[in-house]
Amino acid sequence: MIKLSSGKGIEADMKKETFSISEFAKSTGVSVRTLHYYDEKNILKPKRDDHTGHRVYEQEDMIQLHKIMTMKFLGMSLDEIKDYMQANTFDLSFIDTLRLQESKLIKDREQIDIALDAIQRTVYLLENEKEVDHAVLISLLASMQNEKKQEELAKGIIKDDVMKKMFPQTAKEKMIFEQGLLTFYKRVRAHFGKSADDPEVQQMLDDFYRLILEVVGMDSLKELTDIFSLNIEDKENEERIETYIQEIERLVPSPITEEEEAWLEQITTDYVGPLWDEEEGEN
Image (tube, rainbow, N blue to C red):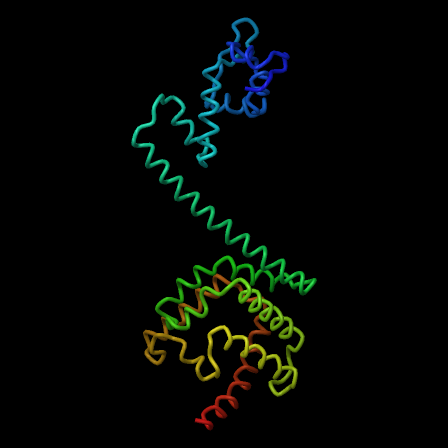
């Protein structure tokens, strides 16, 4: 126990039977304001001086306060702690509480890991780009946040060998892909309205599909149509794939406008057609 404001040493402090709230706060390292709060919430209620009405803390209160701090350390809420304050022993039922708390902490740790990873990847983008459109950055952050959900949705829809290449990528691979997406969206904004045979539009789509093919480990656009584990010509499967796409769009908002999306869809159709015919001819 640390030295009190009265100037008495540790031995005198140990012998001291009662403490004012300021002495108790200094001795325990807990603020007066926090002690007031615990009193108001009936978590740690000290006795009151009969004459002055001031709070009077005893050695037993010291033990109770450590009990509170220990359970707070375990991540329990004050409402949960309050239920255990009157108990002198902990029985097997406390195991269930600890296991629930363990599950919560594991989930919290996963969320923290995801957030830290997203921060590092976002810093990488900003350091390279200096400035990023807010809609694009929010879209990329949403994708980072929902990577596990996207992977779960893809199971049974995307082929396993493709899934292994898409999930999980290394941190470096993710950063390179996100940098590529960022560049693509910037170019969509810059070239919006141009025709599919415009050289800059052609280059934009060349680079984009090269990026996608690298991620899925394929060599041609034709192979991209074979990423699904379902027969896409079956009506029921077609609906499943459409639902999958809608769920992905719900998780990751598009950073471009409806007009830009319509234009992109048109120039992509115009771009893919000749390449598709070329690949068919080679076969």
